[in-house]
Length: 360
Image (cartoon, rainbow, N blue to C red):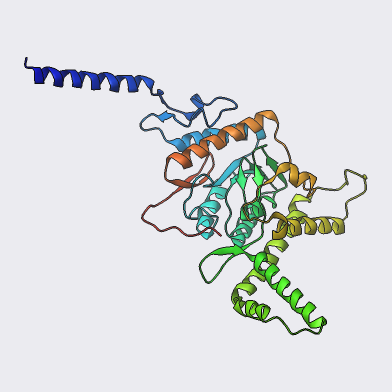
């Protein structure tokens, strides 16, 4: 054998040995992500998992829902939008979800009168939330929300329509201050535009009260504000606040009859007053400063005085485990939305050829 052939053979043998070594270092194929999941490291333990060919990841989603249903004794419906990676806003809650969501609800056996909603989303359209709430309340006597992670903006509005809100320690809600699209195409907080107008008016009134001419800079600033944007900002803010207040009073406070601190009876007038206070705080942009601000369950309870239920250990673990699976599915596949139950499966995929849009 010539020297060149011997060198080639040695290189090929070395490459084969390296490939075998890499293969030995890979985790084994699994038929379920739950087979590799470890408590306290739910996602870290599966992030590099290799799923066996032919395995449907949505089967693991259904397994997670079944475990929650076993613990809660009622159907669990999932609405999860991508909060893991940038998708240009295509995963936001919008009217394209209406049909699959109604089909999801329609698969629940008619004798079931209570339901859980496993919910996570960056947000979306408030009026579509109203459609979801009407769909659920027409069908069920009780609706409860299980929040495993981020539930922001319109998602928070949706959760406020529940008889109860169950949040893990890692979960958060967000401000419901609406975002409006400017002429430049950007989304800005509606209340930021309103606050700017109020500030300009205040300073202008002060100048006039002092007998000074109205500062030209203020006049130019007011003239530069798009009147349509301002109108939409005012309308959107009122809509979100009124809807949140109504949801809290009609559903969240429905069975609140005795005040925990004083033992006094809770009147409908008091419910309305407290619901309006909470809604006003959640919509207040100058309190949270950022539309993406995370509001923990402790802040919701201690500062807004909104009751948030803490899951018992078994339920908490089931919610965390299911959320780890959802995170894996969204992170490792083109999936950006899951509308699922043990009876219904709808996954929306990100089409890379379809241009994205900014999320409201």
